[in-house]
Length: 206
Image (cartoon, rainbow, N blue to C red; front, side):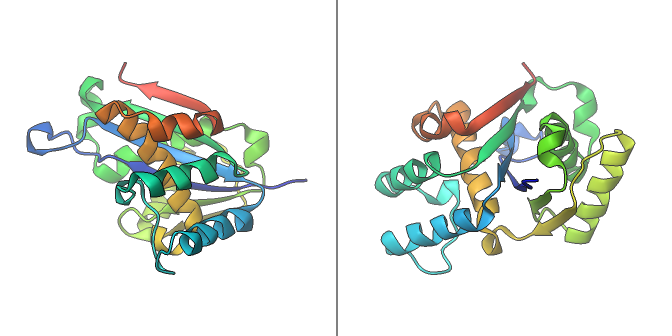
């Protein structure tokens, strides 16, 4: 049986304090691949070909140079992975969401997205999430919310890592960032390049 490695990251923030610069949109993206080492090697190749430092961390907001951004997203469009995403319009959410802690808000939508990924694809896989707060707390809270929501995740292993040390999280960040920029700045260039990789995108707040 083919097993998949999943990695997730977010774009935007969980705050509702729009007057002080909170983002209107919040995006969670999870990618899945049967060939995680191939994706890690892809980013290493991109670093080398682009003359970037060996420890350069790919992140959407760092790709301000159009030529580099185009090169990266063209390579991703040809890579072996699928993606699922949730786009949250925080300005249109019900009041109940505003009472959540940042971690609870984040994990609520992580679990919402997990539940929408086909169970047969999740079975026996590995889930890697970007570090959000304290890793042990995030992992335990994730398991608690999955259980409370009666979501049988099916993963063999769940881990929390820093994005700098995990290229798969960096790819999830790039996809999330492309979605976030599409709706925040009406800039569709990067999104259109990888749109076909997104199997499902859920909208909240519309």
